[in-house]
Length: 245
Image 1 (cartoon, rainbow, N blue to C red):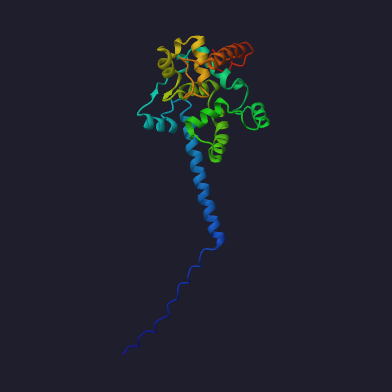
Image 2: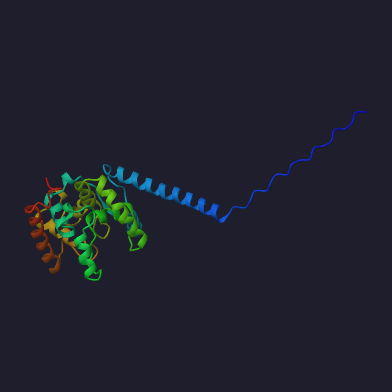
């Protein structure tokens, strides 16, 4: 009778060592890098796309549309906007628009010296916030705005930044963009705005829900006259050269 071959003892599989704190850190860093890389790629794609495609409805417009039951919004190219409107907005909101790279350092220093009570956001920063981010004063939003604004300045022309701003800015409750505002307040197209009308529209921008361009208060009238003067100044000294044609 043949002898039964002896069974060779099975080698026990070594138990995998539990993940160490160092390996967990490596995994966390790896996933954090992937997430941040994905976010960066997402925003890079949006910035590139919106350099030639009109941005769709943004988060603030969407929330206002739900709240009000609809909004007034009508995109027009900058060629269809009265040139004085573009100059008036720059004079009112960011007179050094053509001379900075997204941040007006002089205005920031003045704002800091005055205790932060004075706004120093450029048109580039406002476009970045309105198109790519959300409203609010959280540090996260401000940090992302600071990171994305130079990218917008790098990819978009100044004329494009101003064109987008003129189409997304709020001019009255639920009224977004200069074409909708011109129709809403004066019953005309953006290309047909007069100097006074353009200046009054620019004058309501800091407080669109509290000011009216068609029924201006004494303050708005005075502010509009100042804006008209500023618009002439930036045209005369060349500070409108990056967008004026």
